[in-house]
Length: 435
Image (cartoon, rainbow, N blue to C red; front, side):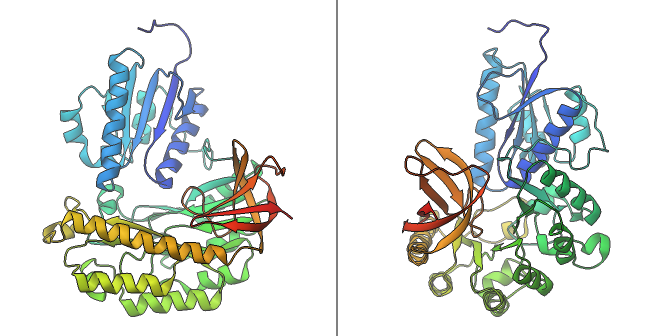
């Protein structure tokens, strides 16, 4: 049992879910530090207060969030933690249920409750802290959230119910925040939002992602700008032009396409057809033959017959995405798709996930073999025992290929760019040596 003392209480912020949640945690930590609070991120050491930033997007993420809450409640009951607070998407969507089922949490907060959460933690909410946050990523890269919420009406997605409608941040604010990050050593900026391509429509009445990129590339110190979570419908062509012409904008695009069958896409309320999807991919690859495209797919969506699944599988084989992830469909409460009959058996869904991922592993292996002997400019994120772990401009942190260099034979500086000749390749990793 812990004994109370007059020491400054340590607040441990635990982040679950996506990079957008991580950004929110960093903002919270920046506010806490500005109020002279002792704050750490996902520390294994004992803390007085724990704030869990939850994810509530899909079943597995919800389960992880609930299990994490229960783990820290156990620590609280054992006397190892004084207070446990819960915030984020799960708390926003299911607060009444959580309060009933897990009452030992000291208080629950939604995604827009930052001022109230800070007040409970004994901190003041400082509106003037533009761009002032505690980054938890390696010093050389950081995420920049350019908008919050989403105006899309995809049938399967609960994000608009949780995060609300799209709210873009002004270009001037984002440039100031990015400049601060660059001054603190950030070389790679990863733009995130629920939908990057919608940026600006709410405040400027037109899409202005390309205009934002034009300002960001001027910032001294930034060398890579990466685009995550783009939407295919009405994709702004001026963004393709920026990617092609500006060397700072990585030839990399994360664009979740979800499916290729036009009937499924219509039911998903995606706003585009197979033809529109394929034309966009052709435009991207014609403009930038070396572009790396990451996508995500959903299998087992209501009405996905064996024939429609075979169409998806054949398309994956023909399109040869550089990066690809697959989710199995599950009903989300209060979404349009919940009204549909979830008619694909769970075991069939899992078989389809496994089959698509096996196909992608083979595609990734073949694409990686083509890189052997070539030289790529890489940035190195970390060292794991006897290996340095880095990435090319075609790879985003945590989700894509990694470049591995033997630390017993070579020396590279973390956070620095190094030219690496690829000597070997596996399904999802490249092995190389400095030139």
